[in-house]
Length: 157
Length: 289
Image (cartoon, rainbow over all chains, first blue to last red; front, top):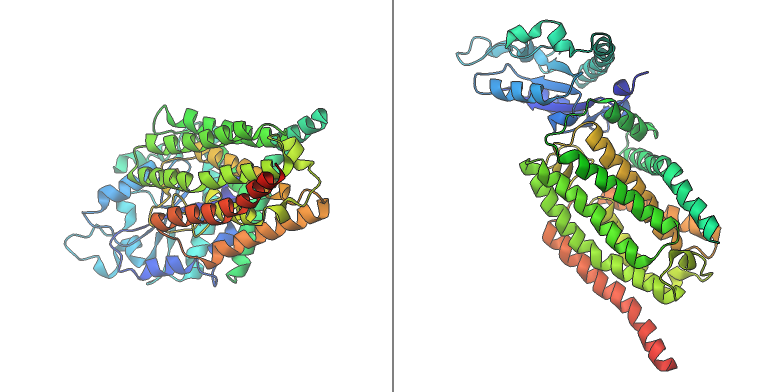
């Protein structure tokens, strides 16, 4: 078992969410759901994070912030988009300033469904992202390159 | 005698991080149980460290890594000198230098959170330093020697001679170990006002080095606690374990204080408990002459 799977550190950013999913993310840390038993630590520092938990539909103002956080995270990294808004914009999809989904800005590895997403499914998403990190690490060792670049996702910028 | 102490010091170098990591892991587990959680496995700190070192080294500048490495080296050196039975005065200097390197590393990142964390760490250093010196003076007064080897072999229940100083030491241990209520500069708890404070922008292996030196620090700090009970091995183990558990309990039941309160309270404790404890020694010494 890879060390990265046993200690996935998280960074959480609210990209114009209604706060519903964010409250559920914080609920994951409470005694009832206890994300720390998987080795998760919520760090505020992208340089120390492995998994990016992002909620909300992303609007034009916070695109640079989302990209900045993503780019500061060291490889291998995984992005978990939480909730309906992070998937497609949700009920805000038609708004004039809304981008409509995290994947339009940065590559997403795991989608967590729900409006708001349940803490159980968020934890499931984090555990899946940790497995993806292991795969990415293996791929990095093979190609000696960062997986995002290898997958041709650079073109999305 | 000297050869025996050297072995202890070498054992500290090798076994130190394992004990420090386990202390950290057990602390996290107890904290979780106190909060009604399952908590991470007690080997979690080792997984974290292994992950941090498996990360690509990506320092924000050229200065960061040498400074963090120096912090580790001087933290190890402090413990090595203590376990080697070396001179108290030398240890005070090395201990301070180790702290300064970490502060410089935080300043070098240019992160505003790192800078505030570094400011606060400097304040904490001024807060705990008088008590560190008083502790060592107290140990000297009991053992009549400046050497840790003689202090460890004193054969007297040091804690009964120095109850005030022992309380003062526990008070500053909370600062040195960055436990609540004195986790101002950086905290292992999520969502604090300074993000990661002192360790902001220290990523991957650089953070791993900071963690590793913290483990070495834990071991020699609890080693100091051990010294207060060193006349009897069983009493020493019980005393150290009780202190360890008390510190975890305090970490869980207190809220973070402001720096003014941390500084003034630490100095008041140093003056009242520390100096108050030393006065009888001087009075007795006067009476004898």
